[in-house]
Image 1 (cartoon, rainbow, N blue to C red):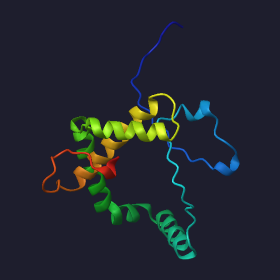
Image 2 (image 1 turned 180 degrees about the horizontal axis):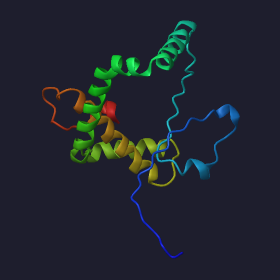
Image 3 (image 1 turned 45 degrees about the vertical axis):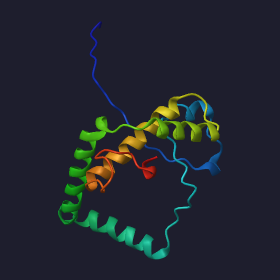
Image 4 (image 1 turned 90 degrees about the horizontal axis):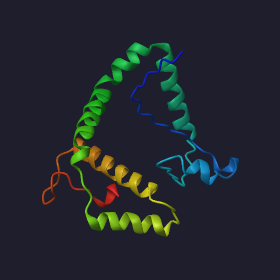
Length: 150
């Protein structure tokens, strides 16, 4: 009745898409900042599938023990993520790197600049994740973006 509230909300959508189910419309594709086509068939072999099911059953049987067992790895990943988030604003791409990304987008037939802006954010995030995991190598600036990040 005339009462409205405004809340800050940052959303993230992670989705999968099976191209065998039909083409993705350009209108829908344009709503996503990043679409990754791995080109890889991720079918697991029998041993890997059994291992995945065993882990799921272990979790269902005793979630607290499962979480306790993996707590050190989860803590390490949380620490790395916190460090990466903190340094992202300080990671800058060179003009040559931006030119490379724009050339690749043009070569791929990408229209508009939305993809260019998002791919820069992805490169920055990858660089931040890498820097948070290990100190920079000799001869490289502390927050450089590597070719692998692009």
